[in-house]
Image (cartoon, rainbow, N blue to C red):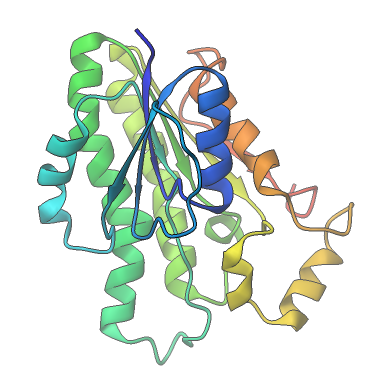
Length: 233
């Protein structure tokens, strides 16, 4: 029986590439996202679930019940809001970004790891960011991603004895829709810091995520894979 992988935000960007790469490996993929209007994958092994991950985490058990048991969890969904300054950040906006980028991933690890523990096998990969390591103009994006890096370490210790490996990736900027929220000046400044002079491609980050979720040795757990083209070594 094919292993089942859940990919949040698997409808576009990095998540879409992760979805495609899992399908190439013969995995069954459940994609949870808010909008599938541009999602054009037609495959019997893909199940799509429309859901807004910025909702209160108290509602997640009903989502997990719909998803069922999975062998692999990819907490990929995320967004940033650089239009807000640190001293003028609406409470509602702060709650939305914390829900999507931190609270929901942690709660999904808690809920979906239960069946993994029973099966004595599981792989969890969280998409963090360089923003959680060096700071970011969107203060609450950086705080959320830093929290996700720490949560990765915690859950690796909690679940490791049950055959579950938990890791995360911390990419620098990637050529996705998220870049529309960054100013041209900031994008130009960042490109000066990387050795290749470009942003990462979604497929490059996806390859690392899928490796951590499949072929990566079990002994590698609790790690943060830095993918930043030597901009933060």
